[in-house]
Length: 312
Image (cartoon, rainbow, N blue to C red):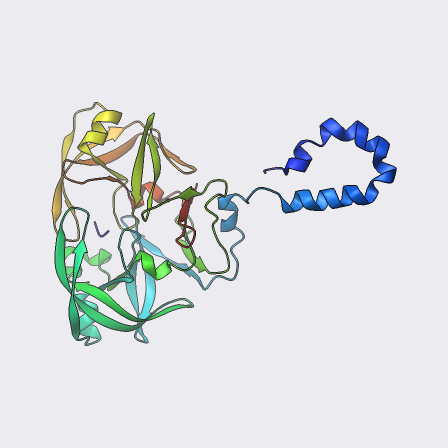
């Protein structure tokens, strides 16, 4: 939106059998070797965060800039550029085109499409992009929504377009915030049952705990906040008075926001944060996990397995 060493069962029971196996070792050598091999094949899934250091054959491995927590990468469009694009896991579809890009490439209007920002729905015009290239990842023949995003952004935060979640739908996306590196691989996969993985049903709604309260949060790298809490959820996790925090900009409008510190701790996967200033809304319908909460984490997203992981 524009505004996450396991031992094999054989090894685990080995010590209780050492004496009996030692007595029979001479006659069971071959059987023992076979048992070892079988135990190795039955080991538990690798921890999700191990993929960060073991990414296979990445198509994309680029540096990115951040402005107010949001990610910006260089992208070529229709063979021209590079243009500055935001990476937004809260944006549906392949992406968006700013009106400045439409003008620069003389793109004709193709049609219209409805777009929801979680609060309201609006109709926007669409254009056809022949290609978008990020590193070695190329998408072709895409119809994307176009809007005048630039006029609502400060000069240093302007962008030519947005890469939405479907742009990365057929591989593993790795966003390393501390090192400011973005990678994408089809050869590596985040298993939904790996240690540390967070399976989801709806992109990218993952379990979040705030103190003793369990909730579901929308992981949104395009939101320049730490957390946005619906008022009903805030009342369950904190009792401090709220202060006015101005307005938050959504794709189709704005929200009146309030703010307050929340002790937490907030837990999303392996990421833990305490004493966080949050935004609170009477109208926003769900807990939002924004870019500011992710700055010390590596975020893995694999839409093939419907799983994410957050590695501090």
